[in-house]
Image (cartoon, rainbow, N blue to C red):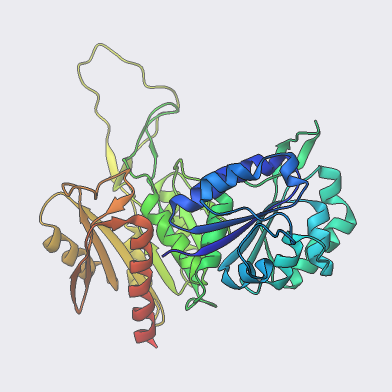
Length: 399
């Protein structure tokens, strides 16, 4: 859904990174309006953002070469989210104390929408007690912050103060765009990605799971207000902001992580592709090639995490499982739904176009004890919300 996002840019070398942020937000279908401080225009020209957003950039509060309205009030009223990235120490000080002496600070003060600040400055400036106090004042006023990164800074120092990754800022913006929070006060546990089962210190067996579906579900739950714990196998995805992440490798590690949270969740989404088997014995040294034409490895079965959690399910809890099949999808999914005592089974076929591993879309069928619902192909992000919507309804029925 198209939203209006006001992007404030203050003076600092990180201002050039905001061009990518503006471009990405436009590609997501949002209407992006940029406000720059005069200092910011010393680092990057307004024309860059006007080209990317197709909207005029605001710098001067008293610009007479623009359509007639009180521009800072008009932008403040239209904004669905107001993000300042990068935010300098000076701008944060203004926001904290309600100073409004330029277009950005005036509009920011007038806006009533959710606000996000991404600081970027020298380490000493960021860690200065005055700056930290100003940040806390903003936080106490319900302004969200995304933490600065560590690394080499433009001034030559090494430490905290880098602008957060653009993807992390986008992630935080996404969470603020969802205003309804039906999962507030609820705890959600999501498993994602593959597991890795060692054969020796060098080799292992795994599967093709990218973790994209599980991560999309976890972010949807977070955006809907839940306290989310994401238990993830090894993936190449960026860690989502605003939730707890537990990293595991083997099926046994994932079992222990999930089992340890058995009494703490309201909703469990078990989307990880967990290995069914592991090597009975892991070689302590690298397995050397011999003159033999074959290698025999004895495997033993891993814990069935979903069945274990289904058997332990409490009256107020809802559990969702995933089933990827290559044949007899409905029969296999319904069988798993019943055997593993879960409330919702999300099933897809590896043979379906746009529904396999490592893609950004999925086509699934939802199975519950009450019936079946086949969904069209959609992005995994959109499907994450569809799944959470079903689980929210199931949670209400439990009550």
